[in-house]
Image (cartoon, rainbow, N blue to C red; front, side, top):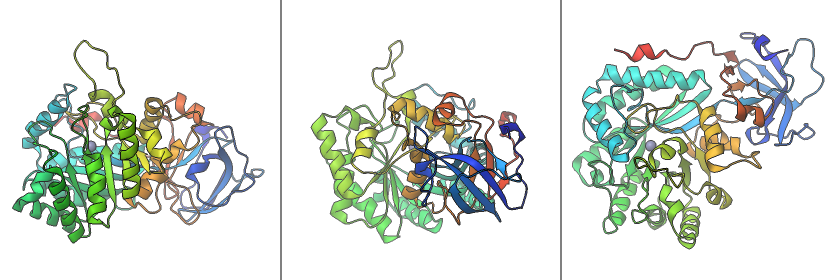
Length: 439
Ligand SMILES: [Zn+2]
């Protein structure tokens, strides 16, 4: 049947016949399935009670099956790095394309961050993601002073409200030197009490001081000790700058090994790794592999922010060494980052869009076969979102049904007519309307 004719029976058991699925997004033995030029396999997917009940190489479709005729089916996706607290604030905030403008514009907007304002904007962002097929989100929450209590209250309430539909995680984001203060201890306690992740920033941006070569070791040791004491994972904004001297990634790797930090460590951005001499970059990637660090790259805001000057064409893409990091066997995910705020004025929390842009920015094609993993199974594993981001027997049936029959077709149109299933049921909500934000 045609894409427009697909009807998902509510509550019943049904079969999605002849679904084309990227091999890297399926868990299990599917020997014998027909594979296309990009390694995507043709499968029958049985759904019962909202779960994946069976996966098998496609056979002849039965008359009661939903015959997808080889159109793509993906798991719903994981956005492991965003900033829901700042987002959906255009035109109240203004973006000027600079990092300092992002920090200062956000700082000025914080006066508006009441519970109601944050709940409206953050809820809007989550709905955009959900309707477009995102089921797990890790957001950073600016946590610079005690007013962060409001953000964490909103977050905890939204996590409860969305439980079952979108799994939400939050990172308390603050400059590292905050953890030398009494407030830093309160923040770590708040993050622990909220089931969050401890976050930090190494860079000097806006009016944040940032780390220095002399201070970084002490700051990282303190930060990691505070996380370890509370059993927290950590997630750090690192080297979000074109200044090759402001390069703290090797220090993070060494600190993780020096302290024997037992939790998960994620580093975000790391863009000036791409500007280092080859030998420095290689040694740093090896260090990160030894330290067991995972990466997330955020290509859309970095392309927007990095190497920008009025009247001058940017000369580099502003992103990290994704190919080399992958080649070293280190997990690296693609994620969305800021959305319609002072740092980045565009975006819709659509991880299919991030995938399509990420492929182009990084040239993650030819072959493209393993690239879909960077928005599904890889981020799910990095953030411990068990059961999300891949298609596996016994898991909830959270799926995206595309009109595209191949990764080429998926790359070439926006797939705005995708069908999203949440635990076997079609998501019929529309994208939230921007007029909701007018107040
Ligand atoms: Zn970020």
